[in-house]
Image 1 (cartoon, rainbow, N blue to C red):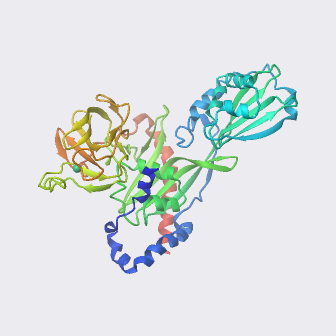
Image 2 (tube, rainbow, N blue to C red):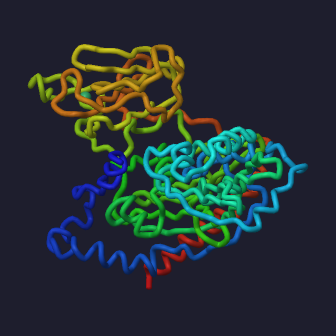
Image 3 (spheres, rainbow, N blue to C red):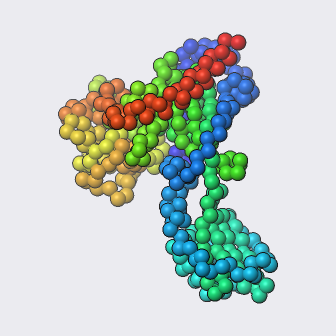
Length: 466
Ligand SMILES: [Zn+2]
């Protein structure tokens, strides 16, 4: 939550709104109050459009849900379902015809066993259900706030037990004639439709994105996709625009959330960058430029997305604590204590411990030439040590003010062959482009998406001119 609040607060700093700064001063408060309100009206008509919903039904969901951020364990559950021992020989008992249902709302801390006791159900039935097959134990994952539906037969015995795990998964236990239970997990088919949005930034990526109907999840994905090209804390300007095509997930025509971004175009300070999602036949998914270059670079620009820079790389800086000239060989990011710090590139931890002045420090070596340093951490990420291999974006520790620091912040250094470089301006090596053998498939898949992005862009332009 704390992280999300930081993101929401990361709006355009006034000094960056150069062209409109004077206007804003004149219009003052009125403008500030009206801005949000009027934008909300405009956005409905001109900037946000979830219009182009092209039904894109995908028959086999096992192959299509590889990144459902809010749909955990999908692949696992699907696998488990397919291996359900079918008790075809046992038919559900006749008693199921006259089932009396009751709902039990699960309270915090309430176990299945406690629920059975409260409802005067047999503990032996509970044991049979949990051990019915490899799915039975999933009944132990019940969560407070949700409901269990309890079905009793004429004899007052438990005949059915159902639990809605998620909008698309339902666990069902059914009593069989022999007194045992069959447990199955039924899955609803998720339909993926393509939604689109066109957003002009007036306030911040988050505020304007949400006004245009995007979910937090989609906005975070967008920030991740462009993380190598755009520093969302520093580079965003008023009137920057983005166009995004993303999946909306539906069950029986009811929206249940959003899936992946399929393509997006971001126009930052007049400079457009386009990204297209591609899944190669081995199942590896990545975002590429229209020409098939990877959107990824060997390094991301900032270890804390959206954080405010409190001190830049400066070889003649007056030290705030020591109060004398001392080179500042890194960049400081002000953030609350506990904010996660991400490794900016793949590499290996070569130091993790205390350093004078720097407090708790992690140093990562990236191949032969590059290394990065992260200082003043409040604590390290559990489970990592010197020698641990780290992937780009992995959390390595948390912001603090250990060592010589006037407030909680991250001090971040970037070195090439041991020499300090400015992390904000140094040019990063590129990551691998799309493999040659997949290029034709990629270009074919990219074309309609690019066309759609372009038409969003054109519509926006036409609306501006009017
Ligand atoms: Zn510093």
